[in-house]
Image 1 (tube, rainbow, N blue to C red):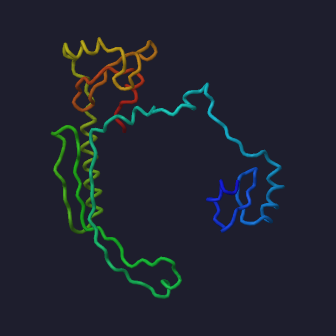
Image 2 (image 1 turned 90 degrees about the vertical axis):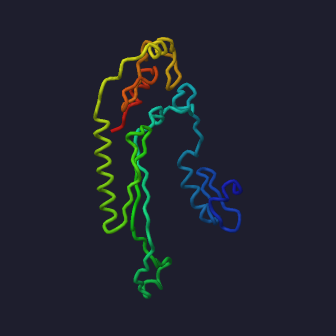
Image 3 (image 1 turned 60 degrees about the horizontal axis):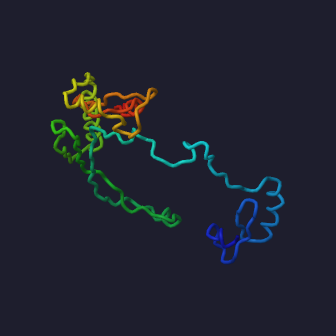
Length: 213
């Protein structure tokens, strides 16, 4: 047992292990004092998942909403330079780590990425005073622009004959692959920016494949 848990406590010799809680001690005296106290309680045991509850015992991907591709995101980068700081030798003498430089932001670049070409922008580059203030102003302005785009909540465009035939023929969800049922029926999933039909989805997936706030 001491070899099994030796990595928990490096003492230069075999540790003394409590068989009730598997805690290693560096001395036999400490372990002997601990064991009578620990014996009042039941020993540790391994509890395996209940096979009758597959949602708790089977590891599988269930976060289908995480597969929803965001239509917009911002790529940002800061430029910084190091500046020496004033040091107090009396304080440095008693500290384990001494700071000698600090980072100062001197500029940033940021641009909007989107799968829709008309909404993608060129990088915005700024260098000068008040970098952080300028950065937040830019991000909040981008947030408002994106919000305005997504606030245009229109109905899905009518399906073409080919799209309607594809929808009618599908028997499984285009997102999770499960069969459609009466309790989880087939619905039309569409793009929330272009309002174009995408694929047939089950009602459960349709509720998760929605634009985040």
